[in-house]
Amino acid sequence: MTTAEPASPPPEPAPGGTFDLGALLAERGAERYELHSRYLNHQLPRMLHTIGFDKVYERAEGAHFWDAEGNDYLDMLAGFGVMGLGRHHPVVRKALHDVLDAQLADLTRFDCQPLPGLLAERLLAHSPHLDRVFFGNSGTEAVETALKFARFVTGRPRVLYCAHAFHGLTTGSLSVNGEAGFRDGFAPLLPDTAVPLGDLDALARELKKGDVAALIVEPIQGKGVHEAPPGYLRAAQDLLHRHKALLIADEVQTGLGRTGDFYAYQHEEGVEPDLVCVAKALSGGYVPVGATLGKDWIFKKVYSSMDRVLVHSASFGSNAQAMAAGLAVLSVMESEQVVAGVRTTGELLRSRLAALVDKYELLADVRGRGLMIGIEFGRPRSLKLRSRWTMLQAARKGLFAQMVVVPLLQRHRILTQVSGDHLEVIKLIPPLVIGEPEVDRFVAAFTEVMDDAHSGGGLMWDFGRTLVKQAVAHR
Image 1 (cartoon, rainbow, N blue to C red):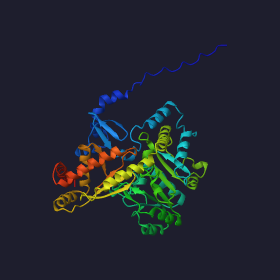
Image 2: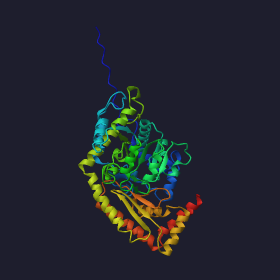
Image 3: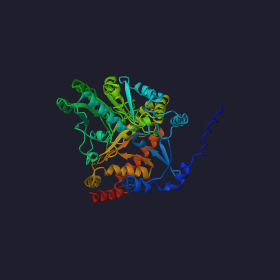
Image 4: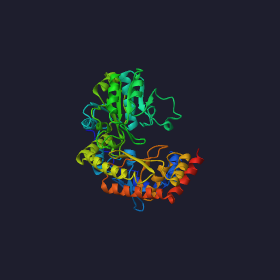
């Protein structure tokens, strides 16, 4: 009897195979803006070049970037909130190395891996009135899930949202987007209706029509940094439930400690949303992830039988890398007491900026919670400044805020953003791990820029005239 020879093992691949990422970046990295212009959104590099933001960043760590010359830049934007723990946190990096090295049998589609359950358990521990989680890949997917679930379990078509809201840019979430500039040209959308943030009478009028599935609301709106008035969320929740409709809290940007509590809705006693959307910071800045948390009865009604087991799913949802990143993020938040740090640092930053309102007539308001702060500019009193302000406003609202953002980067190497189109508001959403040194650096730079703006001359107003010409030319 002949014994078959055992199969030979496959040959070991050469280190790195045929792909060398480092070599590719060394060879082609300098083409970054040209490549983007040619193959991606061609308006992005054009815009960056126009405002002088076309920098070349070589590396990053925590709340800082460095360019090729070794210059340090302070990040007060956190990738629109994605980099909650800053860039390349060592615990999150290690978790990702570990999960890759484990070579898990991931995404088989017909088993139940442990990491999604463990991450859901940790998330739900911060929201004990909720019971189950659906994992997708982004904030807009988390919102889409909440909209679908609310419409299905209530049997009603219409979702209310607040004016000036931002919930994402896919078709469902776009339907509850309060900014016309994002919606224009993409109709028809879902049958949804805007109500003013804080207006309970408007909410009650819509609920009386009997076709409302839910209200979706950001406890603090990203656009303009406007907080729901005290008592509004609890009163809205009670109104919704009396009319058998649901409350959806969009915590994609405000969640995971951003406002000095784990969720922003937790600042108001008695608020227990039926569905909560999170994403951004849960990723650790590495692997896209979104999560929709909800009550048990909602999930059981959506997934009501084995026939409906895949009625809502995501191909990459619950993948091992995203789950590992999320677990590492929550572990760091607890071990490093990140939320408590946000309360302390956020109050320091907000109070020091608020103290400047009486000093500078162009500075109208400083508001927000934790490390989500809005700096609003307004019409000055003095005739000379007022004439220049009026010139900017006539060309395009929002140009003065852009005039502040540009020197913060070019002169002080601090990255910030205007809070929305046609808004004179700068939004600060830095990594949650910044401390007093970063607060000192930002306040000193901001003060210098304000001094320049109020001097009535200099490079800042020269740049303003350039912005006016561009705004008029593109009308």
